[in-house]
Image (tube, rainbow, N blue to C red):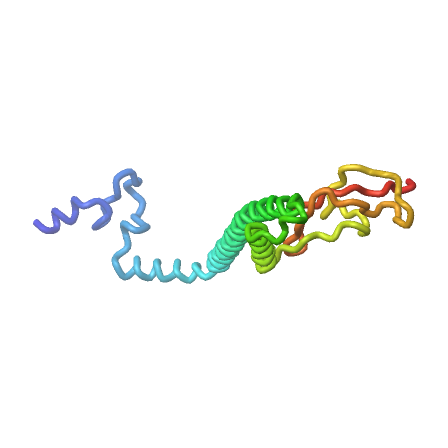
Length: 194
């Protein structure tokens, strides 16, 4: 009886597998036992190291992309922090402008008043706070015009003893931070001959 069952299983005891011609022997996984399948798998494993450089290359590219993304995120974060700081520092500069205008408009006879001294002290503390954060006033009068740090409002004929292209008057004070203009100085410039 067991011979009859074995004879009925396709691919065993010489019976062809479904779809195989009746007179050809069965080959492939249907004809292999567990030992032959293991040997075939081991033979295929010998071919895997050829694919290893591809995986290593992919890994190196992925790692480089992660590093680039991390650097880009840090740079973007630093730029965002710098921009936020500069907005706050510009607000502080505008308050300092108001305090300096108030002190400039103060009549001479009221300069000794305690409230006037308080305004002067507040302006000085604000200058000190800006200096601690690296904010410095931009030099203007007598300096050559620099479009990075100066904003020319007007060109005039050069006064006596002034080089052409030099700043002759400061209209609004400018401030710089880390060799960059936080706010460009608004100036009047001596005409150049060209």
